[in-house]
Structures are given as structure tokens and as C-alpha cells.
Image (cartoon, rainbow, N blue to C red; front, side, top):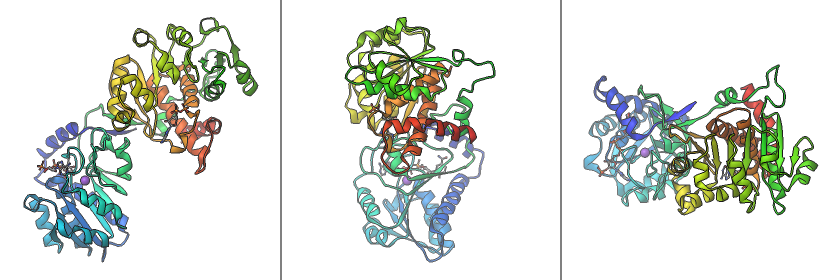
Length: 477
Ligand SMILES: NC(=O)C1=CN([C@@H]2O[C@H](COP(=O)(O)OP(=O)(O)OC[C@H]3O[C@@H](n4cnc5c(N)ncnc54)[C@H](OP(=O)(O)O)[C@@H]3O)[C@@H](O)[C@H]2O)[C@@H](O)CC1
Ligand SMILES: Nc1ncnc2c1ncn2[C@@H]1O[C@H](COP(=O)(O)OP(=O)(O)O)[C@@H](O)[C@H]1O
Ligand SMILES: [K+]
């Protein structure tokens, strides 16, 4: 499991550790890791041209000490000081001793243009808001340059705790982060600014509960259901799909396609698209008598392509088994009926649906995914999976939010969300908790999307067809 901790927690761990170490030891650890990552990126350090962008805090100090290390290995290092009188004194002295030089911001443009490597030490976890006006032109110069860009701890201008980018920020090829990942490095839009991320351990002791967790192959493999020798289709779990309408029969077919690959022993379909479902998937148990009379299920999926069928949504919400609510179902579900449920509920909105539920603009959700998913989970007393470029899953009772590390923007294709809802519903029926079902489904779905796309456009049914390959990849490690 990969984890991320917020700034306040990092600061507390840093204080605790600094009290036990000689002064400056932590910064030296950070700078050593940073310089090593830069050397790897450069290939040949000797003779390379390195530019440090240095702000007024310790983030700039890290850059200066790393620059000193590179200068000692023969790089030509120039530090652009944004606030010369407040630059880290020890770092600056070290750089000068190693043969590096310091210049004012007015010289930055030309230096950046000719650089092989730029280190962004403008601001780290002490930053607030986007870059300040005096630092903004540097971001433009960096974006135009051919140099590789390494962000120190975080790309300057992004919010470490939330992943928000409120103004201009530096775009890095690599971010070297210290002690722990910060939430912003794993959540869009900030994640995109970070490039690839390298974690340098500095010995921080962090609490058991992180802010964010990202499942890896081994974590997902442990969650996925495997039929035992004594299993039969009912013991494996039956998932009910209440989806589709005369207008949108395809949503039913795609949700069933996902559900058939999700580990339940049987898939029951209830709704007006039975003919279309059975034609494509003859193994489906089809009924047109409504959820209450459909026979036993261990979990329901309601909503994909449901149109305006509020009665079916209400009937499903009244069932005392886990329920996944997606798409139209999110709009049709009575909030009080969701909150009153005793069995687990998993809601799976995309940003637009989440915005409608919260009564805010879509871009507010896209810029602040973490607070949006937490807020929805708290309001509805339900687990919430927020889809999109970064998929997040929050539990009803708070605690760490899961961030999905798989996926591809090729998944932004009509119907792929329907496949996800069927897949997650099937995992719910097989007995996973709402958060585990949602995060394991997102992981498999993202991997299946990558396998299916492989660099070319795909349809949602292609994604469903590659879920088994993703499952195999996960369990084989
Ligand atoms: N934690 C750890 O374990 C370790 C942490 N380490 C390192 O320390 C870093 C944190 O250092 P830090 O606390 O000195 O803050 P930092 O990020 O340099 O910024 C503060 C300065 O930036 C300014 N500023 C603020 N907002 C701004 C903006 N939008 N745009 C431009 N400027 C802005 C603000 O200015 P002021 O408001 O004072 O005018 C203030 O002076 C951390 O990220 C890591 O690199 C490692 O060395 C070792 C282990
Ligand atoms: N830019 C993106 N990058 C990665 N995944 C994405 C992106 N956009 C959408 N997705 C994924 O594609 C799926 C789309 O679901 P949804 O928005 O419900 O579409 P539909 O309603 O057409 O099925 C979700 O799993 C979502 O996380
Ligand atoms: K930085």
C-alpha cells in the first residue's frame, strides 16, 4: 500500500525527529536524495548546466545544498534567488564553497533557456495558493525551456494537502518528495504537474492512519474473492442489476458485462432491457417484475441508464443488502432514504453528478476532489467513489481516502462507468465492504482500460472484455 500524509502530520513528525538529530541533519538527508535523483536524470553531471530556483524557505535550502553536491561533481550551478536577503544562509554558503554562484531573478530567463536541469525550490509544504506574481514569470520560462525540471518536495504552486492548483504552478518532469508522499502528489490536477514522483526516506515516523492510501497489486489480490471447493453460485453471491430503460438499453448490457466479470456467482437483471441483455449474455437471470420480486440477491446496482424510474430506485434502496447507486440513480435517490439505510451503500458519481449533489459548479469538484468526496460521504452516510482523471473512494465514517493508481484517459468513453458499476456491484455481492469493492473495482477497471486501449481508442465493451486479464495480472503479481 502506498500512503500519503498531510502537511500538519509531516510537520509534527519532522519536529519530533529534529529534536533527536543534530541541526541540519534532515535537510542534508533530503538534499543527498535530491542530488542523487538529479544525477540519475542528468546521466553525466560533469559539465552540465544546472539552475536552482530558490525561494525564501527551507525548500530553497534543499535546492541549494543539492546544487552544492552537483557543483562538487563538476556541474555548473547557478542559483536564482527570489528573495536574496532571505535565502537559506547555510545552503547559499555551501553552494558558493562548491563553486556555484547566486544571481537575482532578472538573470533567470537566459539561464533557464540554456539549462540542462532546473530545480524548483521556490516553495514546498510552506506554500499557500498559486505562485506569487514575482515567481510567475519563472514558471513560464521553465515551461518554454528544453531543460529537465525537478520539483523539490512538490511542484511550487500546487496545494500539498488537496491537489488543488489555484493559479500558476511549475510543471515538473520529476518530483523528489521527502519523508512521505503528500496527498497533492497523487490527486489531479496537482498530480499532473508533479510528473513522476520519487520518494526519499528521511526517517520520519508517521502515524498509523494516513490521509490517502493507494492500493497496489498485492493489496487488490488479497481482496479479490476466490471460489472455495464448497462454493456454489449462491454462496459466491448474486448481484442484481436494476438498470437500463427503453431509451438506454445499452447501459444495462454494459453493467451486466461488468458484473459477470466481478466474482459474483450469478447476475440477475431487472428492468425493461431484458431482451438486449439476454441476447448478449445468455447466462444472465432476467426478470421484469421489479427488484422486490426478482428473487434473492446479495447486492444491488441501481441507476445506469435508468432514465426517470424513481420507483425502482426507491425499491432498491429499501432492500436490506448492499446497494451501489450510479448515474441517474444518484439524481433519483431520496437523500433521506440513503441516509436511513442500514446495509452498506456505495455511490459512484462523476464530477458533474457530484457537483449536482453538492450544489456547486463542476469545476469546483474537479479542482477539489478530496474535499468533495469526503463531503459527499459525510452528507449521505455512504461510501462514495468519485470518478474521473483521479478516482477517489471515501468511506462513510471518514478515515483514509483511497486513491486509484491505475487507469487511463482512454476510459473517458461512453458507458465505461456502467461497466465499473456492474463490476463493483459484483464485488459487493461477493462480500467485500463498500470501500474495498469500490477501490478494487476501480483498480481492475483502470487496468482493464489500459490493456484494452494500449494507446488506441476503445469502447466500453472492450474494457469489460479485458477485466479478466486485469484480474489475472493482479493475482499473479
Ligand atoms: N518536513 C520535513 O520533514 C522536511 C522539510 N524539508 C523542506 O522544507 C520545506 C518546507 O520549508 P518551509 O517550512 O521553510 O517552507 P517553504 O515550503 O520553503 O515555503 C516557505 C516560504 O515560501 C514563501 N511562500 C509561501 N507561499 C508562496 C507562494 N505561493 N509563492 C511563492 N512563495 C511562497 C513564504 O514566504 P513569506 O510568506 O514568508 O513571504 C515562505 O518564506 C519542505 O517542503 C522541504 O522541501 C527538508 O529540508 C527536510 C525535511
Ligand atoms: N480523464 C480520465 N482519466 C482516467 N479515467 C477517466 C477519465 N475520465 C473518465 N474516466 C473514467 O472513465 C469512467 C467514466 O465513467 P462515467 O463518467 O460514469 O461515464 P459513463 O456514464 O459514460 O459510463 C470512470 O471510471 C472514470 O473514472
Ligand atoms: K518546490
